[in-house]
Length: 309
Ligand code: SAM
Image (cartoon, rainbow, N blue to C red; front, side, top):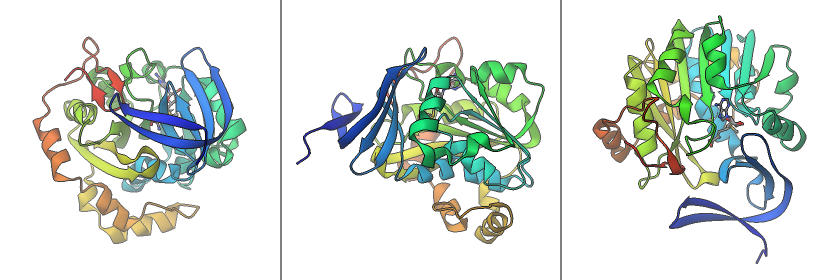
């Protein structure tokens, strides 16, 4: 049996433990605690403030599920913004589309990106030096407040709204109002929206409910991420397209015309699976009444386990 383990706490009562091969980096930035560990089963992974972010072996599921549907549903995505996404894997997915002329990634924490450059090469896969990419280090909300650009697709890949963490102000109705103003009329927003464990659905349902206050169409999607040992939730928000109205053949056609590398998770069949969320999730979404506001923000103790709402 391995002698060293790292622990991913889902709550005070549930933990997923990973055999640890080595710790590659452990330090603090101005904003958060950063760990890059190598686990026996999932390879290298990023952990921020004790939250497990993504792992080498299955990050393709998380990042393709979050990015590829929004990119495929847009008729011609040219300008894309990624808020967060420090590992560089979200921008990797964006840049896989040859329609893209400009991809701006805005992460608060330069130290996370420096660590990703050094220790997580398969995650970014050279994306940080792609000539279409611009990498900025500032608060994502401040960036959107100040930019004059409108985007075809915006991806929000920030850490969960942990109490005292740097991200909770980017889950509110006021923030989503701002995002909507920065989208082109056919624009799409994709949000990483926390866990969809049957015991911890509050954050996910509040995010979806809050987005519905701002966008005409909000589509939940879920993917099983083995590293997280649970379903993970995303929300696609738009005033335009409906993912259910696009056939699997059309998704496959768009992928083969536009995407320059082999996708491992997303295709026409996976697209349909992603947006068909289980009944208990639909029920939680329907029943949620709490709208997340700047003056009453959602705060998590653990991913998915939020206090308000
Ligand atoms: N996969 C993730 C998860 O499970 O929550 C999210 C991925 S990514 C590593 C999260 C990134 O969001 C981090 O690099 C962090 O620095 C960034 N971030 C947090 N708050 C932010 C903010 N206010 N503006 C921009 N980036 C932010």
